[in-house]
Image (cartoon, rainbow, N blue to C red; front, side, top):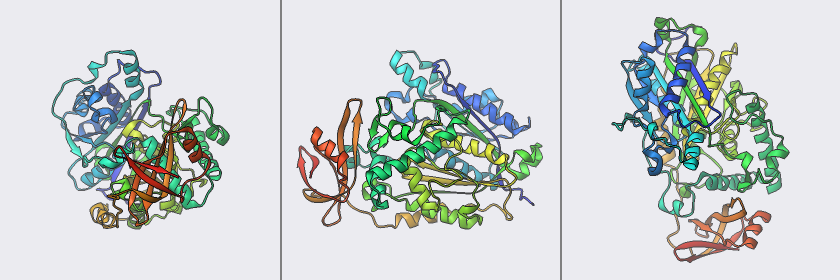
Length: 506
């Protein structure tokens, strides 16, 4: 099949997992190591000198004032020096799990337009070592390197929450995603017991993929019963999620890919067996603030994004052979599947890596592992399509990429995400109630746990005029146990304000 010279392709991919915390390994060391793997995978010595753009997935701890000072300002520049890349521009992404796919989509357009010849995208998270150093006091000041100017940022920096959402602890994903989950369960008409069974089956299937993945952090195939059963080592984190359903954050992992075009790959002598074609990509945000979204169980952005990507590429969901659906929490998988028309129990599976709870959830960089693994998976197929979906913040930012073993039968065309975004931005939004006191109908709830048991009840509700209300419940044991035993979604309660905090009582 003919391939057009401006078609963006992945020609190299590399991943690494470092299983023992090691504070002597710096972020630049990690990025350099996985980048060497990706360059070697491309199989042509000429690739290094062709790279004229290096983009780094931003470290997740790089925005926290307490840990920001521990990280280098321009890691890509220093990794490039070690790799012998001498004529590159340097970039970094913004915070968000969508960033790896966003960067691939961004540079695919730049490559197709001739603005770059070849691009190295890399990221690493050394969170296991970071957490170890915070416990032990090990000196990691060498991690930061030179305090210099930052590279050009790709994407828009924007706070993920408004002040009210922060007040009710929605800044913690372990609180927010369980709220989405309860709304989804109610939408599906399942009892809490039925839904828990479905979550356990989904997670068990992912763990079986991770068990066969040499890169995966956790390589134990769990039964559904093991996933859902609450034990001392598998306690609830935020109901209904047991620990086995949550991402593993404390990992040391890195990944990298090399991108170029068909024409440049021919020039560089890269064997065509290494090529994986990006058939299309799309980047869309849902209604930005959680409290303004009319539906907490859905994603209009994913629905529209896949619809337009499928239309632009001519590829239907039934033709996709491999999926890596972002899996920070089970609801992220289920919502995405619902929007793209895929069963979460589809025989093709929802992950090529094992997912964030088992392969590992390395900060912003998980989906670069998904892309690297998808590259390896598709290379083994005579013909296939791979869909990678990536999610940032709170089901807020979405990036989708469709990969293929074969080129399209036309020139590369960039999907116009800006025009699509306007359709999402024009959707009706809810507003927070100026006066929350009175009757409210619960739309979503969770109970946050600590090591000793249930700690905090959080609800999202609407008053009788349709305005949104965020609230806590009472924190006594009877109230929290009642939430766990008696499904409150769809029930009414009374909201009062105490010391500036909304409290919902049943």
